[in-house]
Length: 133
Image (cartoon, rainbow, N blue to C red):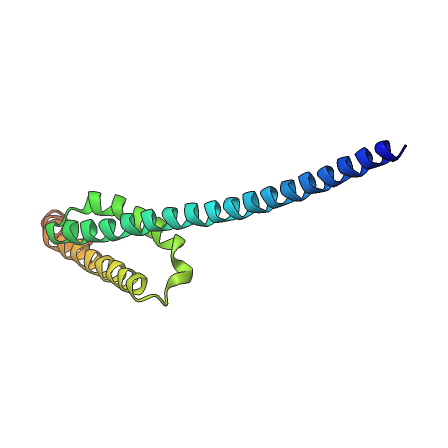
């Protein structure tokens, strides 16, 4: 009976050690999982930031070339990317990108109206002077 009692105590001790090891492993796994989630979200944010920087630069180039169709598509993409960074407007780089995007939009709007008035308005006036009034 003493030997059996000793074995039972030994088994209980080993079970407690095993349970402790399993808890430590689970705790480590949870930490790693948490770190992985943060790393994944950081990588995603950096990719979006890279795409945003590239898109704003391309938009500025298209703006100078007066390529309105490509600019329109890119404006939509830039606006979508900026929504991901809306809460980071106090960060200088994000604020700069937002300002540049706003400036490009204003410039494009002015250029479109300018081109419209210089290209379409004279034709319309020649065909129907009453259409302008």
